[in-house]
Image (tube, rainbow, N blue to C red; front, top):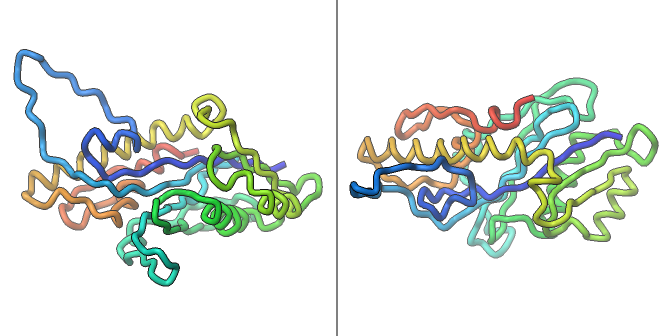
Length: 244
């Protein structure tokens, strides 16, 4: 049986303490005898969800970005073109006969997180194409181990996947640290992501530019690269955290 494992995490652009749920920032030590002056940073209430993972062969799944939008209808939803320039393809074989490039996938809803429809669309449109030859026979089944959350126990989806030879295995809530293998890769990834955000904001301050980081730069913070506004080169947290 083929096996993949994915989990989701919050991506925050808030450079203050409020953004810590998106990562694990380094501890800052200071001498209490001296004043501890604050520094300028980005304050942003918008968050997005990132879904990452890997298979049993150590190949990283193409990331899925779930953005937050104020649009209440499908026709009103829009993604800025700048998003795509920061999101490269991921190389992997998965359930095919040869390695190829796989694009990142994107979703939009008002909360910027997974709900029942978005989770089903993610599994059907982002995961199953990686394994086109799955069916309910020995040697061709696919086990999807994931975190708990909305959409995991939809009876219609589970039945549809079972018919295709795909078995969805959601973990017990609030046990990712003990039951999710991919949590070990997420720890390093999220630390590097928060470092990238801090470095980008600091560079904006040094150059006298706005510290507001637009949501379309999430791909830059995730994959690394050169920021077009400051010229700052950022390391690749995704490659570092989810490498083979």
